Every structure is written in structure tokens, then in C-alpha cells.
Image 1 (cartoon, rainbow, N blue to C red):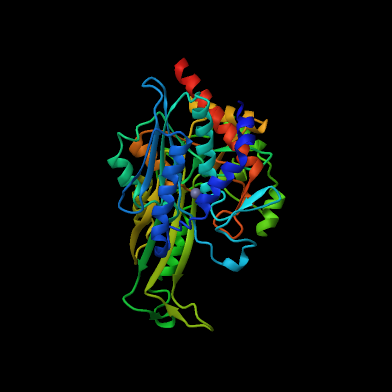
Image 2: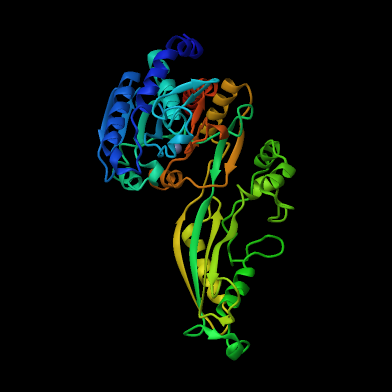
Amino acid sequence: MTIQEYISANRERFREEWASLIRIPSVSCQPEHHADMLRCAERWRELLLAAGAQHAEVMPSDGNPFVYAEYHVSDTAPTVLVYAHYDVMPVEPLDLWQSNPWEPDIRDGRLYARGADDDKGQAMIQAKAFEYLVHQNEMPCNVKFIFEGEEEIGSPSLSAFITKHRDLLRSDIILVSDTSMIGKDTPSITTGLRGLAYWEIEVTGPNRDLHSGHFGGAVKNPINALCEMLAKVVDENGKITIPHFYDDVLPIPEEERQMIAQIPFSQDRYNAAIDIPEAVGEAGYSTLERNSCRPSFDICGIWGGYTGEGSKTVLPSKAYAKVSCRLVANQDHEVISRAFADYMQQLAPRGVRVKVTPMHGGQGYVCPIDIPAYKAAEEGFTLAFGKRPLAARRGGSIPIISDFERILGQKTILMGFGLEQNAIHSPNESMDLEVWEKGVIAVTEFYRRFAKSFQAK
Ligand SMILES: [Zn+2]
């Protein structure tokens, strides 16, 4: 039986199982849903066993439990670790939903419900591709599933859990379906995510707010000082001037630049959508390169002195700013954090004291597009969608992916099948059912190709 035939023959059951997950309101950030988290984990355990896992269990953690399941073929086969999450975002405001968020509703080829995509729908893609191969007795890989219940609240228990169970979770590649494609007709695989470093700066001048008539010109104004310092962080070519900032930044491979150039994109429409006269950034890079493959610096907030109605002639005692850098893979957020703090001291003009407090940070991630697992995913997409997927780096961050690399020592392939219009986290979240079925085909093919490339090694 081909995968298409298997999907046709089992479509109704697939949707009923998917619905059984959706009906459990597993909202991780709302304490009243605590019992639902356990129910949802237990339901996944049943579904993974029914799909063919030889063993499945709900494992405790410091927070919501994890679901672990495995299927062992042979000691020489490669092992794939599939990560997904069973928790969802809240549904409020409820009145904006056209149908009950906890009951799937199919309209215009889409399934509407909370979790339709993120991540119950995408996790079902993984479960059903797995089920098909096991059912056919053709699963060429050892498979381990690890599903968490705290992704939407920042995965507070994940790194401790995977550190503790590092041996259990040993694999040759990690597979995650929790991202989106550029478009239904532009399949893509997310290959990079940016890291983050964030600081608060406090500049102190005199010990109290002063009369600017009595003191202005004779005492350094901390807001003036802060503006002078921050104005130097990015130069006229859009380059960040923090010493050694670019030391670890890897150049964008030429093949990837060519793929980025193929992403459907209109600079005019981009400018019009956010109503800017012109998009400006680092010289030598396109907008899509700047917002995904290159680091950036932003002042996120700046305050001090008098900002109320009318005018008050004051020379303030303090000035503050919150600033951040988006980092790219290979840049270490802690190294950058220290470099920036040192730089601010270096730039501080005479007459003020500067304090820099690091707030939080995270590492970026990049998946090389020439490794066998990426190639296997690419071939899966090509078979399912009839088109070679574009490798696309995203400007945002998913900290767990860099944790996997750091703790488990493996790369992650982000085989995501979401679409922008799926409206994850929003009212009327949905999943395109045609894309969902193509996703199952793509993942099935991934297993076959990955096993083959592994044997060839
Ligand atoms: Zn998600």
C-alpha cells in the first residue's frame, strides 16, 4: 500500500484521533488546566502505542510531564528523535472564534481549532508517517518520540530533563515539526534561527535632577551621554561597532544566498505594509538576508527626565535604555554580552557613571544544507510538494533547538508544515488539510532517504 492509499483508507480515523487531542484543552500557562496537561500526555501515550511504538510512557519532570515513546528496528539503523509539544496557547478572546476552539471544524479544506497546527496537527503528521512505515513493516530507522507540555511557556523544564535523560534520548538526528513554510506553493525548510542578547543600561549623572538654567552646560547630562553612546553602536554602513562583534559570524554560503533570492518578496510591498519610506540596513545585504542571516542591534526602549505635558527645564540625574542584539549562529550570546558591556564603559563620556545589566540571552542555530539529514528532508518535501524546498533562515529564536545541539550534541531538522494563514496563537487557528497530508508523505520519505544515506556512509 502506498502512503497516499494509506492516508485515503485511514483519513477519517486520523481526523478522529487528531480531534481527541484537540478536545483536551492543554493550555500550559493557565493553572486551571493542570489536569488537562496530564490527560493530554496520557492521550499521546495511547496514540503513539497504537501507531506502533513498542514502548511509551509519561515521564515526570519538574513541570508538566513528558511523553516518551520508542520503536527499535536494529542496533545498526540510524536513530531519529522526534520532538513535539502537546501544550497550546490560550484561546481568549473567545468571541473572535468562528467555531468552538476545542472542537475541530472543517471549512474550505482547513481544520479549525486551537492546536490544529501548533503543535497537535504537526505532531500528528509525525505520528502518522511513523504509523504508516511501521504498519508496512518498512520503518528503516529507530525512532524515539519526546513530547513536552511546556513549549508555549518557554520550556522551563526541558534542558534539565534532556540533560538527565541524555542517554535515553541519544540519536543521530532530531526531527521537529513546529515551524512554517514560506507558502503553500513555496515549500521551505527553516535552517536557521537567530540568537539574542539583551541589556538594560543605566547612566547616572548628578545625585538629583538639576535646574538646567543653573547647571546646564556645566554638568554632563546623562540622557545626552546615553544618546551619544548609543548613536555610536551602528555606523553609517549599518555595521555594528562593538569590538570583535563579527569575529564568529560565518558568511552566508553562496548557495543559500541564491535560495534567499528565490523567495517571493516585494520590497515595495514590504515598505508599504509597514509604511516606511525606505528599508535601511547593513550595506551589501538584501532585506531578507538582513533580517535572518545577519545580526542586528536595536534600542527597544529609552527613558529619563521629563516626558509629561508642557515643558520642564530639567537636567536629569538618570537615563535608561533597554537594548538588544539579534545574533546569528556561531555567535555566543555570553561573549557578546560581555563585549557590549565593556564597550559601553569605553564609550561612556566623562562626567557620568554607566551600569550595564545583562537581561537574558539565547544562542542562534543554523542547520547546514549539505548534511545527509537535510538532504533527506529536502527530498521528502520535493516528493510531496513537487518542488524543491527553499532553505530559509528565520529572524526569530527557538531556544530549545540550540539547547538540543548543546546538550544532546545533534542538529535538528525543522520539517515544519505550517503556513502564515494558519494563525497559530490567534483566534481561528487552522491547518490546511492538503498540506497536512503532504506533510505525512514528506516525513515518510525523510525516513527512507535518511536510512539510505546512513547505510551508504
Ligand atoms: Zn509550537
